[in-house]
Structure formats: C-alpha cells, structure tokens
Length: 304
Image (tube, rainbow, N blue to C red):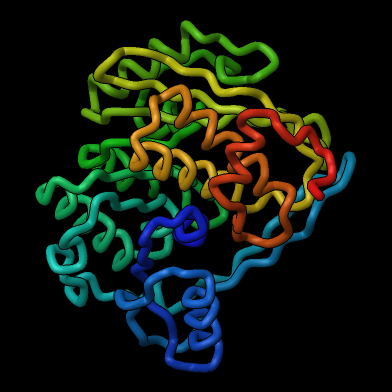
C-alpha cells in the first residue's frame, strides 16, 4: 500500500522491524527505490518473515504458504515505538489485521498506534485482512473489534462483519452475482452506528475462474448515509496478490485528494483492477493511468 501511494505522489512512510542482515538491507533498498520513507523502520531480530505463492490457472486455485514464525516483526517490543512522535504531522494512518496476527507484541503495538492516531486527530483506516493460516478466528475476535473503535475507515468483507463484529448479514448478500444492496446498506449502517467508524468499504470479487475475476467494490459513508457502488471490471489475472492493498491505497489517495465519494470509489476500483494485471506485490501505476481506466479511455488498446 505504501508503495502504491508513493507512486501516486503521496509522501508515505512504513513502520516495521527488519533484521540487520543482507535480507533486511535488501528490503530497505526496495522500499527506498520505490519512494517509501524508511526513517521509522527498526532494525533487530534475526529473520524476515516470508510467504510463498503458487499462482492458479483456470480451475486450479491460487495457494499461499506462510513462513513467518520468529520473524523480526513478530518479536516487536511495543514500548520501543513512540507513536505520538511517529504520527506527528501525519494525515492518515493505515494498518491491517495481519500485523496483530503475528504475535502479542505486534498486536499491542497496533492497539497503541490506532489509539494514539485517534487522540491526535489522524484519520485511521483498518483492513481486517483476516488470514486463517496466521491465527484462529477466536484469537482474531479478541483483538480486531477493539481496534475498530479507533477506526475512521474500515475495510472488511461479509465474513468479517458477521464473525468479528457480530453484524447479522444474510449469507451471500455480498455475492456479486446476487448482490443485496439493501442488506449491505443495513449492515454498513449498523457498523457505523455501533462501532463509530465513518466509512465502510467492501471489495467484491467474482471468481469466474482462477484466471478471470470480476472486480468491484462498495463504499458506505456514515455522515451522508449513502451507499456507493463502484464500476465492475473483468480482469484477466496476472497476479491477484496486492489487489486489496491497492484498493485501499486508491481510496486513501482519492480522499486525500478531495475527490467526491463516487469518484474516489471509481478510482480505487480502477487502481486495484490494474494491479491484478501486474506481477508481484507492488502497484506501480500512476494517477494518470488509473484515471484513464476509470474514464474508459484506453479499452485495452496499445498506447503509442
């Protein structure tokens, strides 16, 4: 997400912990080369967590294996981070459910971060990003709902709302093939009312096959009590990893840029659709490229 924002021209910084070895050094070089600030990166521990991706095709699904035990970030000491100092002059702070899944230290650090950001008036966003191979639903339920209390913009899915927030939403209500907008709006309004978030964003993926997906999103805005539906893109997948992060980055950028909500959602959906045509985790597209897709200027033609 930080890299995507950097390519949109946003001054973005990454808070993490990397081992003081060649692997950690290489990670820092990549971040620096992509335009991300690394002044808040701690050095310590012995290894950097990794994961392996097996790309799917046609009827064979994508598969991921994690190797994150005993990573540098999993051993993070919450007291080592001065959040009021780190968040000084910051407009927006984003985190995800993956960080607290890595251990007690990262979980407490995340709680302190969102609390400090809220107290300082920094906009806070959270992507649930629940990964069952990293922690159980019961463990996640002990942590995630308490974080939401400090969040302005929440990114979640149907199962997240039901499992972690206790929001009753009919099964399949967010299935793009049979989307129930009234049920979605009712559930979103309850999240806003019961947890105090300002906005709820939900991505909509249609698994036509492992190689072709439909892609869209919904955005509910609490202050205006309006539900916005983004355009639908059919994507031939090159790499689906990073789609959610690029959607978050697109929505964050568009709102920082002052775009109306309909335009902000259109931009975010277009940015994340383009990411899925790019190999690797990073979305390196520019604002102009996203806006061309959002305005349907290119249509897949060769640009000369």
